[in-house]
Amino acid sequence: MPSRPDAKLGKSYEVHFVPHSDLLVCLALKIKLRRRLGREHVVDARPFSHPSHCVIAPDATLLAVKNTSGAIALLELPTLQRRWVRPPAKEGCQLLFSPCGAYLITGSWAGELTRLETASGTAQVLDHAAGSMVQWLSQSQDRLRYAYVRQPIAVDRISPPGNSIVALRSWPFDSQPEQPLAGPWRFVQAAEISPDARRLAVLHRRKGADLRVDIVDLSSERVLSSVPVTSGGTNFSLAWSPDGQHLACIRNGGVTLFEAPSLRVASEVSCAYACHVSFSRDGQFLAIGAWAQGTVKRVIDLLAPQTAAASV
Image (tube, rainbow, N blue to C red; front, side, top):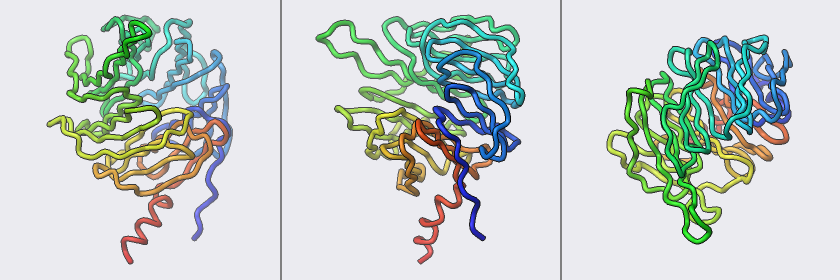
């Protein structure tokens, strides 16, 4: 039986599946909630302009959104009604919920790691590394293990900035030390920890537009595999499948689906101006955000050509 046509999401800078439902959150000029895996519009909201990152609470009842100026809004799901909005503060990276859902963690380009209470929006700076930017933040499936990237800032026009610092940390942040990885990576664009916290995918730039993806074993800090990636010029995004068997990466003209940890290409997905990628909680679907037309695809359909070839 032929599969249904892929859902068309329109312009979507980030796309996230709402667990235990057929709902999808899409960020564009507005925050849009869609059902039937993106096929039908439900509701939209615009708590502020230029939303850039969002995250869904562990119990799927709340959505936290951050914009390019550092403002943060907490919205209810599925209504998108506002709980609170914090005014613009400092630009920064993603925001993530704690395991219990009572807190949010985010990083800023001023080098701060900040914790916010979801009940009130009250913020507390937990760590500050002067002279660096926190430009990526990811967490394991149980939300107990985190990875983030600190990028040193150039101090003058002559000396280049230092190598990126990729660090691990356990929850709760205020009682757990930072654990830097050996690296070295020159300019890290993304660092995504695997669902079981055993591996880390690092997207880094070496020279000019030369990008590579490394998979690192976190127990030994050894690079297990490394492959080149062609930059798409839109955004950087990595996503692990829930079982940790595949890694999706935005590249020029679409998405590459790799096997993990070998980084053998499992599938190539064409999508103009792709900028974000995420898996559904059950691993059956892959959502691709794009500046032009985002989409949702069935993973089994993407892997079918490879499976057929292997069986010949």
